[in-house]
Length: 184
Image (cartoon, rainbow, N blue to C red; front, side, top):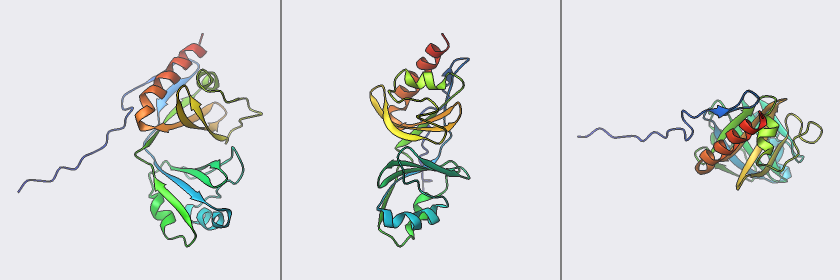
């Protein structure tokens, strides 16, 4: 009898690197993600199940222990767990009406960091990334060139660009080029 073969998904940006002296561009480590939808009356129970308070205001996020909840709309969040915990299991037993879809294999992320990170991102994204408008912890859905993405500011000079896996090489390329331009 033949041994079963189990397919392993290779990270889409495996081995790529880019950027410049002022903006480093790198693929993020694998993470689990869910797209979560719920009405306001379910937020408390879902927050308890996830171990962090789901943000309820535009452009806000909540983080703890490598888990991040990004507000995308009045009833929508992107939840990311960098430790690859089972987010679906975390919300499965919650007795409130909600919708959770595992998008771990659909999405990936590119990390942009350094003093020129905002300029690198702004080379293809219209968001105002000044501290007053997009402070640390801010998150928003926008465009990067011709693709949709979710931008999350994780530090003073650090950003996480979430995009669909199929668009990752394009996103990485445009960010790497923007990083090179930021160094000029």
